[in-house]
Amino acid sequence: MPEQSQKKWYVLHTYSGYENRVKENLQSRAQSMGMEDYIFQAVVPEEEETETKNGHTKTEMKKTFPGYVLVEMVMSDQSWFVVRNTPGVTGFVGSHGAGSKPAPLLPEEVEHILHGMQEQADQNDLDLELGEVIKITDGAFAGLEGKITEIDSEHGKVKVEVDMFGRLTETELDYTNLEKASY
Image (cartoon, rainbow, N blue to C red; front, side, top):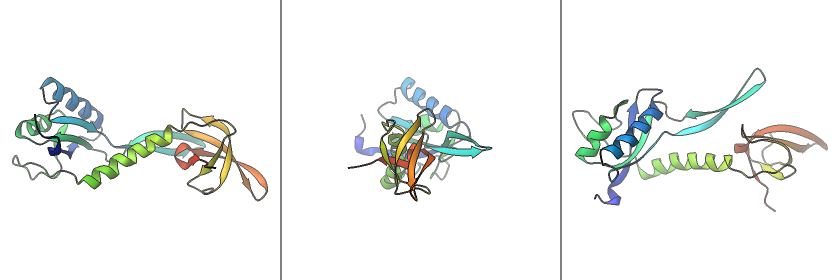
């Protein structure tokens, strides 16, 4: 069994639009070929994106790096071969071809990508209640506090009443633009 300290993150180039299929294929191949001790996980970095068109707000997950998949693995000839020959994988980023091994991502690069994904997941898991006072962290009302009047957890939105110039103004916000008020 390989040393855990040899475990590093690498970037795979894939056909655009096939990132999730490559992730599934890679996990399946690692299991069926007995490579679980060498190939640990595959991640398709995504972030939530909200778009408003014709008065309709739509939230969907967009790939942060279209055409790329991150894989955590111990680099060996056998694990390289399994990953490189996974359907949909066109190659490793940082490899110079002709069978050369790729360069791994730096730990701070991995931390930045994975931390960003976790931060967004944590934001979407906020436990909010009607009437609760929250603090707005981004946008035109950043720094203000407001009271929640409506919650749309399916779309990650809340309606909040904010006191603007002595008048209550209602605004719709993403979960990602607010945090619990601390008292």
